[in-house]
Length: 434
Image (cartoon, one colour):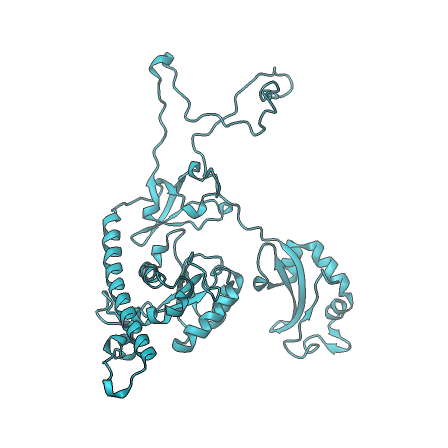
């Protein structure tokens, strides 16, 4: 599953398409949505438009979209027994099924939105039907035929009505529209699949790395900062060591954890790293040039008459001071590396006492910094005391009577394992409302 983004907004406020493809039959579903949809909304869309037709999937392959990496999404599919599989970092071709469909769908949308920019979402059912009724190159059958055992009737199969039957002009126009739209979509699908395969085969290069090799990683455009200096940003970063090879086209690299980047990359994003060599200027008397220039000062001068003084090196006691240039490393990391998400707790929203085989256990519902409400999670007291001891003490003071009753083995004379009637109710409190 994947999203097609950046589409013109329709009258129904749709600007994106949620694409779901069955890996076995190649059947696809195109669902209009908004790019602001969070994980809970995407899950409800899936249940409404996919689950009701096909049931729960055994596994889901997707990219590392923030919605697919959320706590809500992972917890939901873990509860249903569905395995989540993610494509390698910044290389959506790993999810090959959906990637090919997205390429084809782009051409379909250009065909559909040419005359009706504000209503392309109304034509999505026709595009989906045309795609699923077209013969797939890899299976030799249409997705409809694989799923149901036969090909449904198409608008192209419509026959003209006899003149004496008083046909409706509007109905004939609509039927003709379906016929033309279906045929146009079918042609576009065939052309798009052929062009995509030819382009992919042309760009494919045989490149093999061994364990321990040093490689540079290409920085995708989505990792470059926005603004006027975007074109001056680094295009590659590294070097990183190859840890192991995964399949035929992916490698795991020794990426530092604080970079927040998945360590598996497609071979197309990797290039061999070459050590820098000293360059000798013929007119410099044989002195080699440095590998890189020293960085610019971080504080700009106020004016031409008030230049910033050079940075002085403060020596240890007993040594004389000297002016030294700042050191420069020959290896410069990518300037857009973000730190790993700050996994800190900002609020305790609830607590609950649940029965277990070892007796009743207390747990807290916490809200994480920078995450939506759907990612609120239950954690145990030991973990909460380690991550946010101050918040826990403050919360326990507000609910001291309940906490003391639990610790003493019961609530209002009722044993703690039956104090809340089995799983127990949830007491919802918010520090903001306290």
